Amino acid sequence: MCIKEEMWDQGADFMIKTGVKGRRSLDTSSTTSGTSEEGATKKKSRKSLTGEEALKKRLWTIYKAVYDYQFDGRSLINIFITLPSKKDYPDYYQVISEPIDMTIIGNKIQQNKVRLSD
Figure 1 (cartoon, one colour):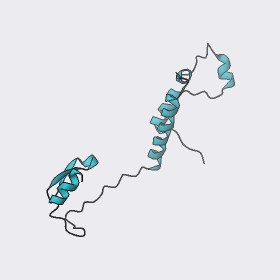
Figure 2 (cartoon, one colour):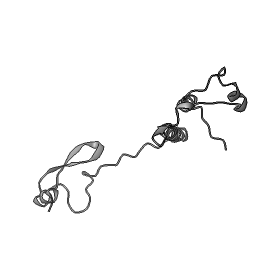
Figure 3 (cartoon, helix red, strand yellow):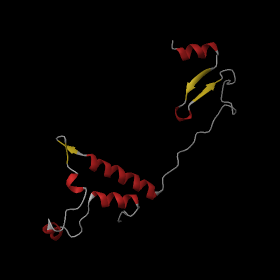
């Protein structure tokens, strides 16, 4: 028999951990068979995210996964953090009409400028 069960059998007050709320005492003498309205507490419902907040959260999850990805112990993101120089790589800008880097993507997510097309 565990300690909590022994204490429960003895009818003693004891402390139980309740997650975020911390610790609260449980008085076994006040609870009778059935539920009492005094001891019942309302569960706090989570604040539901709006469409934009949910999208932003998902985009940050994807962004972080791409940013942290490693192949054979090497990070592959380094060349995509900032755009290459136009002077050093003029062909890059001829091939890629709208270049973008991870910094720009992160800023757009932060400023809620990313929209999904239907």
